Length: 266
Image (tube, rainbow, N blue to C red):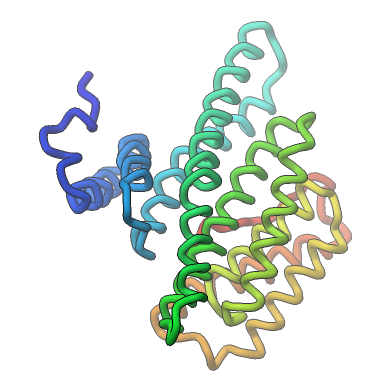
């Protein structure tokens, strides 16, 4: 079976990788998309644009999403020796994917954007828009990092490091988002949504989950007139998810293990 990375001249130019990542997305070949985006992240001397960050998110979201769904389904079946081995196989696939994207985030993407922020802050007459875009990128990457630690914490419940790493990363991302992104920004809203889900499902803290979701929803409602046309659909969708989760979490009849809906970076 031919690997996508063996295609002639694919890695000759950066734009070739972007083109093929988009093609793989259309074809719903998300494993191929991950391979391409990994090369793009590791391309020297460049950082990802907003569109490229979204491609990265879509690639790994779909690959990990299938494994998360499989793990949840297999959990419902009665244990047997063969089934236990199969569960372990799927869980290890999920772990490998999470470790891969976490490595790209913590070893390359986050350090690079932090360095770019420092450089932009020191520059005389710095470009305010450029700095804002860099802060947005940092929140995006920190949110992704929290998400993938949360996915590991869902499955490997005995490993408390992932729980702590998810919580601390989300906290760092939220502090930056609240300082640099408007309340209706889809990345800030998505972060609040996923962090609140982490509080509810992983940390088992219903009060904090509800407080965070309500705070983010109320802040966005008060600034509805600040939503620009480009992000209106994404922002209002996430606001609806926040409200849906609040309704679910505050309903006394809600089942004990009912979780909430989360969202991947918009």
